[in-house]
Each structure stands twice: as C-alpha cells, then as structure tokens.
Length: 89
Ligand code: FES
Image (tube, helix red, strand yellow):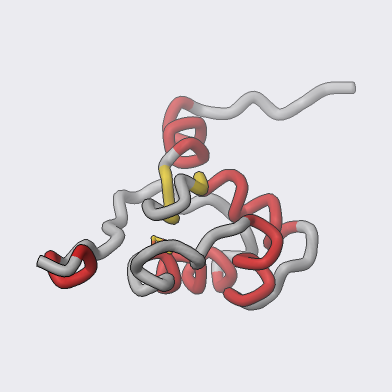
C-alpha cells in the first residue's frame, strides 16, 4: 500500500485548529466531510465542533467553506473571527 506523501503546507493545514473553542483541527473536519458529513450540523455532530462558547460563530463559516471545498484542506491562510464580545468583555 502506498500512501500519498503530504507536503509541509498540507500537514500544516491539517493540524490547524478550525474550532478554537473545542480544539478541532482542519484534518478532522475534512475527514468527516469526506465520510459524508455534508452540512455544518452533521460535521459538528461527528466531530464535536460548533458546541463551544461561541456557538460556531467562528468555526461555522470555515466548516461551510470546507464543505464547499469537498473536504479538501484549505492551504491558504484563513482567519476564524474572534471578537471580544465572544468572551463577554
Ligand atoms: S470555534 Fe467552534 S464553537 Fe467556537
């Protein structure tokens, strides 16, 4: 069995945390999408994302983008929005 070798950029993208509240990495989200999770709700149910303090206001848009990307990791930098309001400041 030969596995595709990942580039450094792909490895970095896979270990990047998408759901900051729950510490869920992009690789885990992509895996769930590739296994059939085709909505943000299904991804959240399978991975535990979206259930943190911000209630997916930060990770939801990124998960949506990953679904549109068919579960392929996003290599270019992206931001998960963090507002002071999310922490009640
Ligand atoms: S970042 Fe995912 S629930 Fe807050």
